[in-house]
Each structure stands twice: as C-alpha cells, then as structure tokens.
Amino acid sequence: MKRIVVGVSGASGALFALKTLEILQAEKDVESHLVISKAAKLTIHLELGMTAKELSKLADTSYAEDNIAAGPASGSFRTNGMIIAPCSVNTLSAIAYGQASSLLTRAADVTLKERRPLVLMVRETPLHAGHIKAMLAATQIGAIIAPPVPALYINPTSIEEMAKQTAARALELLGVSSTTIRRWD
Image: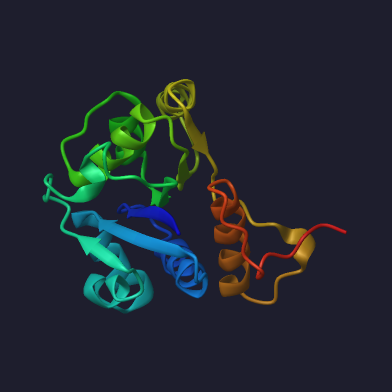
C-alpha cells in the first residue's frame, strides 16, 4: 500500500486540496495522511464552505499542525512522498530554507531529507524575485514545483473538472496514477 502525506497551506486554492483527497480516497491502494495549517482552515471555510474537520474526513488519518510527535515528522514513518496543495509562498519559503516549525513544514523537511518526492503546488501570482529564488532553493534541495496551471487542452467544462485534472497530474509525480486523468492524444 502506498502512503501519501497531503499538506494544505493557507494559499487560495483549497479546491486543489479537496480534489487531491477525493482522488486519493478513490484509490484502494493508497493511504492518505493529512496536515492542515492554521491559515488553511480559514481558506477552506471561505472557499469551500466547509470546515477543516469535514475536509479531514476524506483522509485516512489527519494530524494537528502543532503535533510535532505525529508520524510524518519522523523519517522512520515510511511514505511514498508528500504533496502540499495548495502551497503558499510562506510555506514554500519555510521549506526552501529549512524552517520546520510546524508539522506541515517538518513533514516536508523529512520528506526531502529522506529523498522522497515532495510536490509543491505553489499558488501565487504575480511572482517577485524572492518567490522565484525560494522556488529555485526548494528545487535545488529536491522539491518539485508544480503550480496548479490548468490543462486547457482537456476543454474543461467547470472549475472542478480543471482542479481535478490538475490534482491528478500533480499526484502522478508521486506515483499515483488516477483513472480520472485525461491525457493529450
């Protein structure tokens, strides 16, 4: 069974977290472990009209952001990688420069130190040089920067369809191939 850690930061784009968790829930051979930041709780409520607790029900296991003793904080907790959807610039910067002060950033740091894939769906625009430098720094230590850029070739008919496709493509970077992804012909 694959084990994926899903992080949710406070950037706009809570729909990407929802679609990521829905895809993982449908995969029978994947166990999902969820960490939601304090700022993400507000974004989830504002953008999805649901509570973080409701979103947490889509994961197999969820942890409080301040629980540094949780499994994902340790390298001995075996995972197939981690995705942060969406990833704020604040979270990106903390990861890029080794500031592991919460479970979200500690789990990302552990993922990198164990040489496991870390996918960051960085959700910010426009970007200034500091953002780009943080993306470069994160990439140089092993993270995969995968901004939630829509695949318009699928001719999406809704924002939800576009978000689901984007989440599915990001999960493929962790070795999770969803049957929901639409490919270029």
